[in-house]
Structures are given as C-alpha cells and as structure tokens.
Image 1: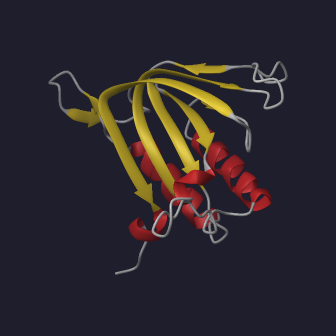
Image 2 (image 1 turned 90 degrees about the vertical axis):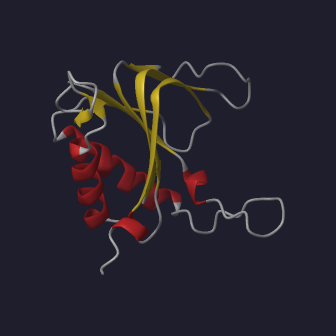
Length: 161
C-alpha cells in the first residue's frame, strides 16, 4: 500500500457526476476538522498485514504539536478525524513516455475491499473516518496544516532487514 498523509486543519470531499459535470446528488459530501487526509493506493499484493501495519503507524504517528510546539501528539491525542480517499494514481509509473502506466495499481475489486478494511482498522482505533467514493471522480479540498505531508509505502517500510 502507498499512502500520502496530509495533516489538515479541515478537509472535504464531494463526487462529481462524470456525465453532467455537476455534484453527484447520490453522494453526501464529507467534511472533517483537524486531522489527516489520507490518499490511499492499493496493490494486488496488499492485504491484512499491510492494513494492520499502516493503521497502527497512522494512529500513533506523532505529528501534532504539543504545548511546547513540538510534534509530539498523535491523532488520538488531539481527537482528530480522518478523510480517506482511494487513489490508484499513487502507483503511476512515468518512467517511459508521457502517459502514466497504472499496471502496479491493484485491481478494483481487490483494492476496494482492502481500502474498506483499512478504514475499518482506523475506526477501531477510535478515530472518526470519513470516506470518498471508491473509483469515483472526486473533488478534495483541504487546508494542509504546517504543511505536514508524509509518504508511506509498505513495500519499503515493511521490508525485512
């Protein structure tokens, strides 16, 4: 799995109907205050181990400031929220040509299941998690706080030494 984590003071997502270009009325726009926007990419090889590792890391990552201004508090410590957005384009390969290849991105059926399980793992840590819509054209708005942006890739982070 590959995740881009952004610490935000607020964020929102809505879905655009591709045919009309208008906001999709079948999706209730989602909003959060202080917390994280997570852009989540899944590969076919990802499963329960990657979900558990990333959920634990994200719930305990200390990137919120304490009273002394040090990044020393987790999202749990600040009663933060998460906005989780599926994003297969995180696995874009742009080494050849000018059109990205997405062959490393997980197949939609598998990626959707992994993303849902990942969001549930985050919720089990007591954090409210709002979601975009898997596979949809979304508009994400956010105020990146800091800015703090961290990229996590389980292929690198979980590699056995």
